[in-house]
Length: 274
Image (cartoon, rainbow, N blue to C red):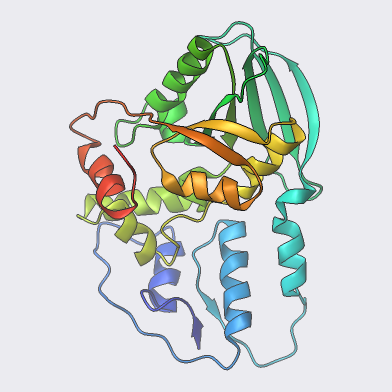
């Protein structure tokens, strides 16, 4: 029996996990799954897959498990309130030579989130940018997204404003990880947009936890901010976690022939306000 959302079955997921599988072959669908006696266990299994960076598909066994993981254990592992400040140092960067870098981590997680403090506090709420890690865009200069240009433009905007914070969140691919993001890229090459590519792999449209960003801001003593974003979900996520967004500051850059559809999908399907 498979444990998977209704858009993908275990056979398809196993094929995708196989490095010999040809992702140029379109997945057929929609898929169906069998009803489950324990949907809570299924939901927990899907969460574990996402945390591990695996495709969210499992077999449901009837024997005694070798390892037991309670939902409370997963909740504790994902609890943003366990994040602590680990280290900080001066870090001049292009566009802000007076910056300071601050690293955060939780006890068991290998992900280390970063804050770049630019300028000096002036008594006003800081201009804050939440930037999710994008290896392809930030490091390799991918033209499929606008992440790299947004990262650098945010640093310049914060510096120009006098003071603020760039949060660099280790939530690659909107929280699904690098390998699964590349699988989603392959589906996009078949004609699926970013939303449908994620859901056909069995993931949420956006699996990021903005409570992590709220915790980082709280540890930095910032409960009221101006947020540099086009994404209302970031505003809602921070507000839900106790950080007040007193102003949303637009952050839009021109498109190119490779990311025009990507930006249109953001506007039309995920509510980004351009």
